Image (cartoon, rainbow, N blue to C red; front, side):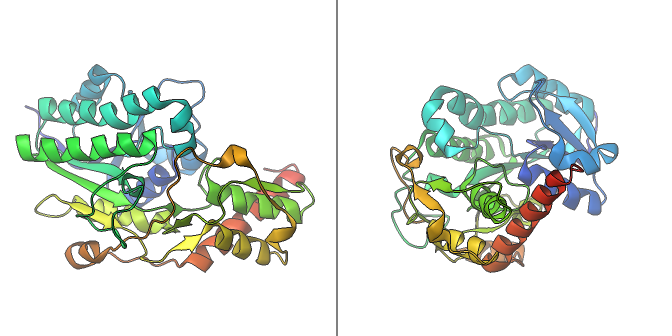
Length: 330
């Protein structure tokens, strides 16, 4: 078996928010970075455009195990970070089978490819706080029972447990990060955090007149994505694999997010936010708040960016983005 490269990492989902921040972190650490992307006319490289001359892009798909085996054999990474998924909760209700194929079975295909090609590869699985769903205890820890409330959450539970299974069955260094909501200016517009920050900026510029949302009382534990990818990397540097909750330990409602975002631009969210039944989930997750004590003690992880700073940063970034577009230079 050919030796893997000790400082080479393969990232699935490299074009997403987390993929872009993780790529920056790994490049700073001296890694060679390989990004796995689907052959698709809709793949956007916007988030990693500033990094493309420093990374290698390879075609592959979580629906096709042979392509994963080929990518691993060709590039011989020492670490694999599985960030790819159908990751939008609302979409998972409309596309539950596709969500299961990518977000659940896709993890199995990738783990199996690692088992076949090189079992010494270290593997990170992006688990999710959505696995806790209808929470069984507050705050949520690594031992809190799962009770997912969406096809996405159910698929993530499968991905989480198959990672544990391959770790215990085949001795893989496979770890899962149970990440609570983590946001940034690179978040997709379909996510409520970015939807709010972008709308606040657009309304302040007269580009938009209202913001339609679902449940304003849903509470989340929101952090900054750039802080959270550091936890991913730290997990794969440990002698022993494990599962870690990564969160801030604070909970804030969607309403609070709106209040801060609009107030940052001198507006009252109540003048612009409209409740729309179309955005109410069939099964809602009301309260998510985690306890990251294990990540702090075992990994030495901590977050640097607080909630208010996160919201303000996102609003300012969207204001810059929209003003750039208004000037025709974006």
